[in-house]
Image 1 (cartoon, rainbow, N blue to C red):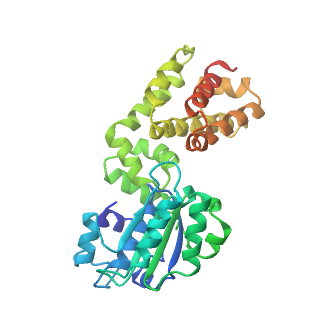
Image 2 (image 1 turned 180 degrees about the vertical axis):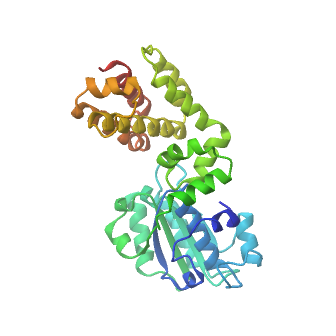
Image 3 (image 1 turned 135 degrees about the horizontal axis):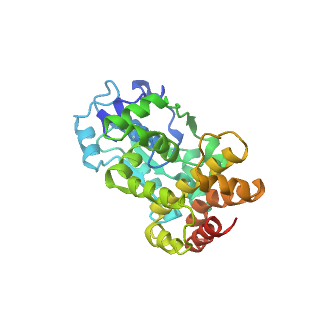
Amino acid sequence: MDKEALASIPSPAWLSPQARYLPQSILLEGSSGGLMAAWSEALVAVWLCQEQVDLYCGHCPSCRCLQAGYHPDYFDLVALGKTLGIERIREAVDFLSLAPQMSTVRVVRIVAAEQMSVAAANALLKILEEPPEHSRILLLSAIPSRLLPTIRSRCMRLPNSPLQEQVVRDYLQAHGVLPEDVPALLEGFGDRIDAALAAVHSGTWQELQSCREMLLTEDLPSQKIWQLLQDWGKEEERIGLLRLLFLSLYREIFRIALGINNKNPKPMLQRKAQSRSLEILWQEYAAWLALTQDLRQNLQGLMRLESLLWAWFTRE
């Protein structure tokens, strides 16, 4: 998200000119595609800006290098696979041991820090205990509870300010999202506004809505399972979107089963709410929740997806 777009959304209180005086080690809670990731990039810019006015000037040599994607004092560490290994952390440690070349500090940002292996986490812990004077370490984690307690205790944790829903609605609609699509996008993507816009502008979101209509069709033939696997089962991002769709469908079923929503429910959802016990519904919902973790751990994700689809199509 660029600076102009980010400025249109209220930022956390800690993202201010005083942020350059924050402690050396920071932990932010957020996903790699969410607003917290964008704010973490802004924090890096604050630390590296040579002008040190306002947040960051955007035109000094340091800011221009950062915008160009290369800065001699910035190391952005992202897992190449599903695990962040010790060798990458050692690269970051070596990077921080050198003197700054352009700015007054050297910065390492570790994205999805929860993916660190035990060995990598222990290697990072050593430098967190005694960081070089000119260093800044920024951890971004969607699941901070997976980090070692000793790592969490050595970082200052900055809160994520909850966004006002109307602010996000206005932002999405200003960027071409239809008003009727906004509630579902908010439910599916949360603060990952850029990801929501990308899904809409690429046509993936419209494709997902067509998939929803298909799933709500009465007497849907079970061979549609193979079509779903073909269309949605090959890429982790698309599997994630299909997962969000099914989670929303199950939440609708729960509301019908509990009598929370009786305003013209879809017949397919009403039938499932009446034919399945709450225990079975919860088991299926929990299995969809766990699908992302299964994929990350390579636990036969495609087979798990197929099993979940069969449960939707055949269990009554």
